[in-house]
Length: 200
Length: 100
Image 1 (tube, each protein chain N blue to C red):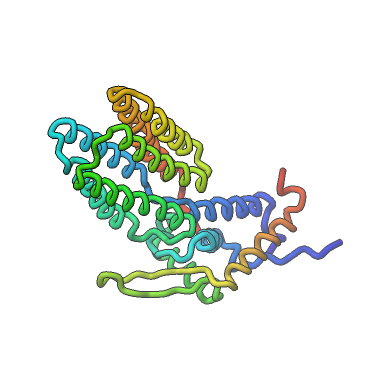
Image 2 (image 1 turned 90 degrees about the horizontal axis):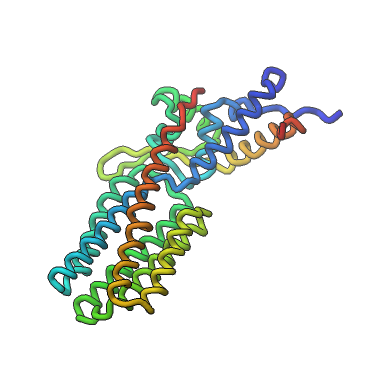
C-alpha cells in the first residue's frame, strides 16, 4: 500500500488526524450566547433593583436566567458527545449557576442584600473564579483577560464610592459578558465556516 | 535497511481515518454529530462506519431517547491501538520528511 501512497498523501493523513482529534476534543457547542444572556440579565436586575428597590429583583432575574439557560442548553447539547474537558468546564459553570442562584435568592429574601460594595465584590469574585478556571483549562487568553477584569472589579469596588462601584460593575459586565459573548459567537461561527466535507 | 511498515488499509481511508480520530477524542458520539463534523453523506458515513464496525474498531449502541432512535458510536481498544499503529507507521514512512 505504501508504494501507492505519496508523501503528500501521508502528510495530509497526519494533518487530518490532528485536526479531527482537536475537533472531537474541542468544547464545541456555542456558549457565547450564555455570556450575552447573563450580561443582559445582570443589566435587567440592576435596572429593576434601582427602579423599584424590590428584594425580588436579583433572585427573580437570576432564577429566570438559570431556567432560560437550562432550557436552551438542553436543546443545543442534544447530540454533543461527552468529553472529559466538556464535563470539567460544564461542572464549573453549573456549580457557579447553582451557587449564585442560592446565594442571591437567600440574600434577597432575607433582606441582607444591602451593601452594594459587598454584593459587587462577591459576584465579581465568583465570576472571576469561573472565568479563570475555564481559561486555564482551555488555555484561552481572552477569557483569562475577562477573569482579570472581574478580579479587578472585585477589588476596586471595595474601595470606591457607590457611584464608581456601579460604573465598575456595569463596565465589567459589558466587557466580560456582552463583548466577550459576542466575540465567542463570532469565533465559533468562523470556525464552522472554515471546514469542508471529508470524502471516503 | 529497516523494513518499511504496512499501512492498515481499513484505517487509511480518509473518512474512516477521520471517524476514528474524532472518536478517539470523545467517550461516545451520535451518528448526527459524526455527520456534522465530517460533512459526509448519510450513505457514505453509514458504509464507512459498518466497515469500522466489522473490523471491530468501533462499537455501536442503538437506543431510544424520548422515543427517538439514537445510534451511538465509540472507539474500541482494538480501534485505538490500530490508530496508534497507523500513526507510528506514517511517521516511520515519512521519516525526516515529516517536518519538511
